[in-house]
Image (cartoon, rainbow, N blue to C red; front, side, top):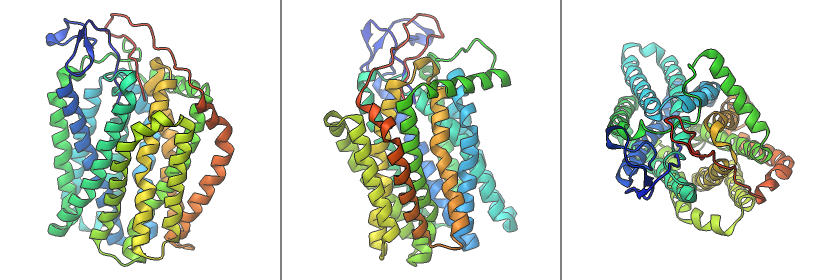
Length: 454
């Protein structure tokens, strides 16, 4: 989500400033007022709840249909690979197209896919696994566009001096959904067939569409960073992707962050891809215990929400990253060595829950260091690289579960991650020094470059 800084003469209700005048009584360069920001965050939180339902339903359905950890890893690969491939295009779109259109389009697609998959589960009972694969792939593409739009929107509506707090609130909202989502999903799965969750997911995304529609008069006035006067063609999209790559290569500290995040995502991805098989298969626990895993991780994430702003004032970015990374590794080691389900659940909560702390640090650093005029397209390349390790995690699980236990694969991912991070230390050490990238000089045209963050 990106927030633009806009010039001002009067205080807006949300703490920003307004210019006065503008379409439909809304100034072209104003921070969104607090009530609208709250509704926006609530809507994105509801979408995150739908994501959690999806993350609960797809692996569980896949494991129930096939009884195979390898097949569950395969669907995890299918769930993430299309998302990664589409991310560069999503970044260019986020610089050129109003975010409310991207949000609504993504949520409409996700709602339609979930409801269609729910119907096909009954109409084509022999094709359930194929239906799940198509659903996972389609959701991943729409989710990629929604995610990048969110990354690009926040700096356009939140001032830089409030960015850490805003990032913490967003992360707290996401973590809350990680607690509430699995619990609600487990309750629904206990009362209804697991396939019914797909219908619930469809309804959730329909509601997020309506929420964005109700905020369109505020979201539509955001100033885009990209050249919106140039038609969006295959050539212009390719050019935008190239600009994102070029910008990233000029930022060594950000390259270090990318490498570090890839190793974290590998550990987290392997943990997620093996969680259903480990809970139900290795420890022979019922579905509700599988839901408790994500809920526990969400609780840890919410706790970090309260301490991250304080820690960020006491620690430099490098120290904060290394602290969060070490805790994530500790969780991964625990997942790999756990002898009881309780040990496994606590370690899993640490593995996934501390990612919230990690995310606040990297998102804040990206906002500070990436040029505003190339922000969304550069962020999309970064997210592509970051998330490459997620389908890779699914591939690892698919290939190696024939020879190794799910826990052994999780432990191996931690060892491999630590070896790579040692090589990244020289790049990451640059985070100790911070020189803010200057915002572009404000202008008064409709296509002013946004002062973006993330």
